[in-house]
Image 1 (cartoon, rainbow, N blue to C red):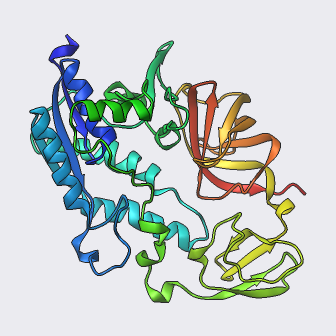
Image 2: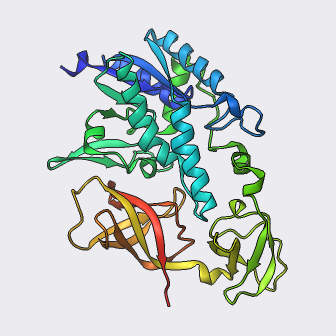
Image 3: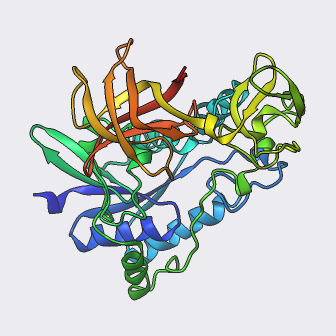
Length: 365
């Protein structure tokens, strides 16, 4: 029966989503391409918005997606989500940075835009499909009565960290065709079928070159003091949005030992800095938690946890927290630069247990 089902593939114009669409057509699904328009032309005056996830190059990406659909012989549709993206992702990103936190816009985009509003608006516009597929490197399996998210076969490309917010309902209608493939194999397939995206480089940044300041008004970027834990002024910062916990470069402070950002205090417009050993913490409060492999946490659970995408996950225990969607994350050994605003994702082997946003770091003292 599945072979008569229709799958909408979220096309970015890149090689991964292109090959995902190709593989699904080969499996006999009725496939259509679905791209989202997120760029707001009113921001065209801003510099550096190019060669990244968000920027004026979007039309080229959409044309690339349309060409892929033409080559595959499948329908193509684009959905305008620029207004929603600005209010949900960009405004969230700005609020978090201005509050001294370091957000992950890709996770919010997946949660609210790509796997929610894109599908809803497509259905509302009369585009009918049974499943939604993307070029993410991840796998979906069943564990008992629950659907679970599992790491990709290629550990270097695994993207489950960005997908921990998916619900059981979303997982039931999602397909990840690339989960069992390596990136090298994906490029081989693209080359073999003559896809123009075969050698296209990947876009790694949310904003080109990490130049986030283009999203902020000049009056929001206010210089202030850099201090140590005792309040001694050591220097001046350019504006809190340029810094994150664990940062060493760009502080402009002469000191006998390297100094790192320990905390950000927006109430006083201050950076608190210290030596590297002060960066290591064991315990944090995680909120807005979404569990996948379990319904809820009722007792302490051993896991491994990642506190950012490039973090080498480490053994930890999660315990029920003070709130209904909160847990206490406790690493067995202290981890460097546990950063409020970033996401912590919990694993049991290859299975994603769940994850949430780092809200509060508990002092070791």
